[in-house]
Figure (cartoon, one colour):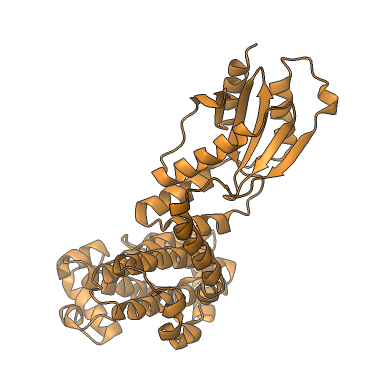
Length: 392
């Protein structure tokens, strides 16, 4: 059986991409997911380097600087590369480093994150099985198969005019790591006090506002900072829908920045907003049943929520449900539902042009009067007056 047919069979079985090279030229490659062009080009450059330096019968497992792994064969004067794949699930730091290194934002950052999340994680056994299948068409002693591990080093064939930028990026990443970890630790712990006291006047000189950086790149750094904080908040337990809304609001503030001095103010806002979200919206300190109640309410906020519905969802009686919630939360389920709906209404009033009736209907209040009365009882403002107040 031709090696091409074997590679196809492995691809169909495992969904692991492969490339075939002959005389150092790529003659076939399965399609990658959509990725930023610069990222694809660098991956292809690494693969080309592997091919040009692998011309013997050794089976190589190459690990590169992106956390990717490749199984590499040289058979019948052809190089066959299976990958990229992952060898463990510890790849979050590679995502973060690539976002910073390439300065990806928005859709490009999501492309890279989705790519990592969809890559297969192959155990040593699975890699040995693929190797056995590849070699099964030839005269090989399958019992003596050995895979050689190789760590791909950074390329030396970099054009001289590319060195300053790459050195700059490497230096920036190195200098930023400690600062970045400090800031993200504040988010993941919901440490509002540390967030409020963080001195961005000092930090910005090292991280967000640095010498020879353009104003556009400063705003890009903020977008990356928002993306990193957003991911940490979700990992800490903040609901993804809420995190998405927070990010959209912060991106609006970033887009409105007109002078560099505002960079520090918005950076501080990003940090404090996510830290506050983690502290107020994560459920780690609650009992299992209370977490289930809160999550049910959040997911059904635009529907009519009754005590009967929640009790059926949790398979416990209404009476027991009410006692549990009041004891742990200090208020009734009905009060919590109203408060949660009002919190959402405050966001809608500030971030949309929905009228009062639209919001009342969306959040399933009986009518606009019921909504207005409930809103004023909780906030001290009528919905119309609250909309006119300055943003936080």
